Length: 557
Image 1 (spheres, rainbow, N blue to C red):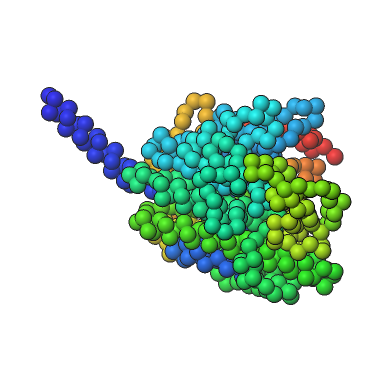
Image 2: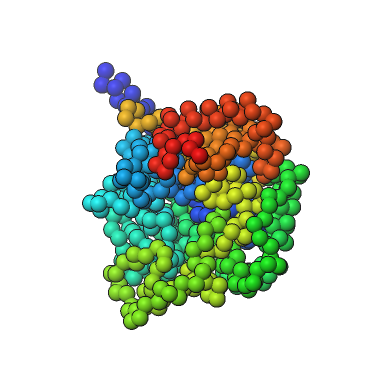
């Protein structure tokens, strides 16, 4: 009898070891405030050879969607739920009228969701996070860290707890559970100038090199490139000198044709309207420089992704590592730093001490060595004493060929590249799938591939579906997709999409198969379909805590 029991135990251990050996490593790379056509394999002129290589040896999604804004996308990616179900239907800061936050707008991850790290860790995974977090309340009265990465399942963390800041001196820079500065961090001091994109890469590499090879790993790499401010290293900016001197229209048209040629959009697709013309811009050199710096930010991120894949290859881990690359929202048309801020000059600005935290996101009043930080059309962006965004016209180029921007749920606000690379698990080499996918699917995919049990009881069931069938060349079942952010709302059922801009605006109806750029509103032609889809959206909104809105009732004039 003991011999039989020992044999059973040995077989069980072998089965467990076999399961662990079959679990892929998983890396999710999320970039920030980039448009659909901003990387080379999706139509861009920007040099992204490492992402292009992953795409050429993997699978691209032409109709993958995010959550339209930083916080909601991150909440959905990490939990597999719609953002309002996690408490982050808007952002991770702020209160609403009369100080009451509805359940979907608590501005903090609630206790009814679990992160990918919390689910994969019990399945044997080591879990690491580097970069932008932005799903913990910035306004917790007690300074609580209950939603910081280590309290949400990650073994190690390096990055920025908040949402934006200088790339040379990040706001709310953090290692594990401690706020730090680039100067006083004992674990990371780069040989050259500190630059956050490189710091994110270098710390991911640090964790990879320290990792126990007997365990699978999950790494969430959340770059802030190419979120404002336009900060980049001169060596990278130099590559793009003069590239944008011809203006918006030329670049946008070239991207359109390349995206068609790549097979990512239909050959008959037309461009959505442009917000402005190059010939009307009074500060052309400044405008061109903004885009040169933006391109350099993406270039530097791509270099980092190349270093990460090279380290995986050196360790012999690359073939069994799923790498997913996507973006948190469409390109950003926000205008921070595009007007003169010299009124914010302070007399007697002093340098900051090594332990003094950078607290300003905008306007950051000084550099660490005591210089004022400036914006405006006479300030060429890139250096640490500048703070400029690249503006609506370039955002329109980034989103080629789609309408609208970050915040909105027209295609320009929610369409993202998704590159899936996994030599052992994805047979496609350079393939494109036109099946729609949603940010809520990332968690479901990770849980499926890891063979991890999903928690039952208080934790809400996942809303997404695993993308594994797509990786295997199969079809997903048709399902309805939903969005809401700041009253911008949409529902997609098959090729039909009902969408509205603003909480008191009218719905528009589009057939995306024929009109991906949303130029031909069919709501008047198909009123019954529109009404039925609106009803479905309302039912979803009630179920997932989108409603009640904190800023006004649904349907109010």
